[in-house]
Length: 265
Image 1 (cartoon, rainbow, N blue to C red):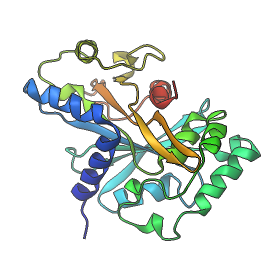
Image 2 (spheres, one colour; image 1 turned 30 degrees about the vertical axis):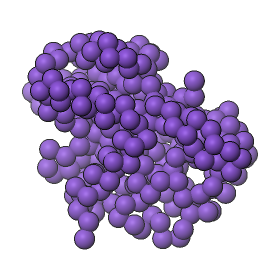
Image 3 (cartoon, rainbow, N blue to C red; image 1 turned 45 degrees about the horizontal axis):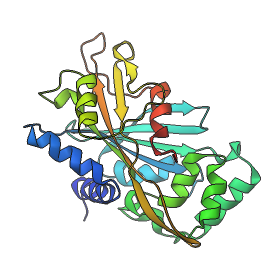
């Protein structure tokens, strides 16, 4: 019987294979004596009942995770929810879904075709969150989706897997701020997402976040192999609430800009 460590490990290895910069950054930090703690893992999906947030979350909730806050992203037409484990040493899980009803009939048709190719029992698997892409798709379809939603195009190309992992800056000993960590990353050649500023959020909203721009990966489409943005690495610094406890949620305005780390450049 699989346990939560099996699922998290499988998610990390799949993610790191698509995003080599994550391993490089991890090793750079460890070489400075840091213990890298993962704040949260993010996954993407569609609001179709076969694959929606609740369905994708099931393997986590069956292994001890509990649903917490919900979030709305009107500009990108997304719903999201985050989950926490009773063991606070476990990373949070953030799952978003694209509201298909907010898009054209052509986009909905392409997504419907993709979901129709899924094995009927896929969503019941313990490793559904890291099942990868269970359909074939053309680059022309990818581009047609991207013209309306970068998020939909990413899902079509990569399927079910971690979109990003996140370094908890609070757990780092040699970086007293997110600004200092960002400077270190840039010194080592990593490019950061500057949409809305390199640092999204502030101590006033109890959360600061930054992210690399996604590594690119060669993806097999039915009409050829194309190199497109895959996954990115995020960095989060959390601040205490008035009652002294560390803020554990997310800030929609900031996350909205973080999503753009996978936009095609």
